[in-house]
Length: 515
Image (cartoon, helix red, strand yellow):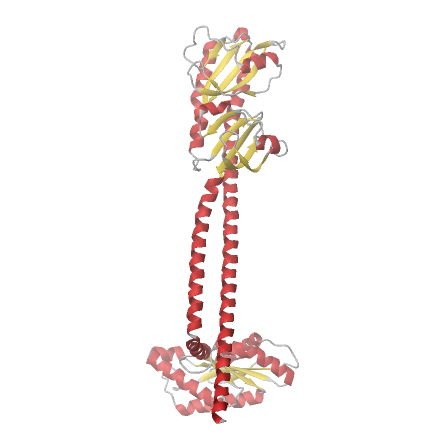
């Protein structure tokens, strides 16, 4: 019977052990799944956040590019606009029959030298012949009557500035953007055209200074979609038109500026574009970063993160396997960790020099003690104590002797605080605090007087003190939680104020805070 009973007990113990092992296996498996799911969710969120940040930063960049490019174009054209308006006023005011060609040539040459974007300034008569230019010599039989801008002004009476499509200069062979105005006789008849030309290369060099990816693009175009300047600059692409692009067709008619993800009609590259229509002129600026340049860094980081996540999963799997093989060792470790935790917790709440509690321990028990006093209707006393002239003690006898003095005083406090609920802590430096539950003013005074007598009996020599021995001053504050709401901080402040009052009265004494 005893053998059968022992067998049953052993079987029961084995089943219990197996049950614990199965429970632990399930716990580890659940833990691994939760951890892996959490890591995957956090990493997925981080990858998505980085994806959004990449496009947000790219959006800021292209917006700033578009704004800078638009401002640059507007300033450049406004300068030519202002000069051409002034020249038209002068030519029409003086009259063509009184036109001083020599002086006008000097004026035009001077303006071209001053304004860097200017390629040239020209005045044509009603037949397209060159009257005055900034050039030192006029080509023989030079005539621009066949130019698009000349035909437009000849057929349209308005005097507004006109920005034409890019043409090649007949005098230098450079690509230029023509900016022209109509000239009229006093009776309103067509008298000719005043033309200012801007070098396309001037825009190209400016756009080339921006640090954007190789597949990025900067475009200056007319409102009808005619391309004037583009980066990267390829001359045949100037013949392409953007009128059917997503921006010109679906966005520009409704908003003068914005952000668009679109495929470029010029080269088929998907880009994030910021576009902006100029406020004063019928021009549009587009700044685009290729989608690939935005995504590539994010993709590399995402791949690295996924590799790290995979390694982490493998490590977790290995960790689970080790745990299942070392069940008993884990239990021992957990017990040791628990003991270590308790030890660390005790150390964290204990002053290492005196062995008393520290300020953290006081903070931990003060508020609960006030609540308990409120429920059970008893007073709570706080006493702040400070060793008198302790800095002078340290200066005279050294910090080692000072530490011994603090240790001895801490021992006296421990001996005096005999009740289980009494708490003595080292508040900081040579300052100590007593928390005395269920103690009124009379009891607190008796406690302090007893402690003073005990310290005097020690006869700790202190030549830097008028008394010749170590002494302390104390401040007492008593709370009646049932009568008034007082916080731990208020009580400590009251006791501290009473302590300073005791010091002011001459030290080696105590003072009681006003209730």
